[in-house]
Length: 63
Image (cartoon, rainbow, N blue to C red):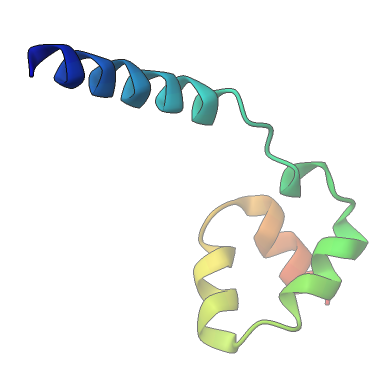
């Protein structure tokens, strides 16, 4: 039984490593594309996104 627990722990650790190595593709998009995305969101979600960073607030102000 300990053996299966150990293998589960190993799998969990490898998943965490994979998540840490993923690339943030949203940040690579140009502001004009992000602007098209944000205007299609419901207002409450757009407001939450604007709180994430100055870049998103700037995109909202431009649109």
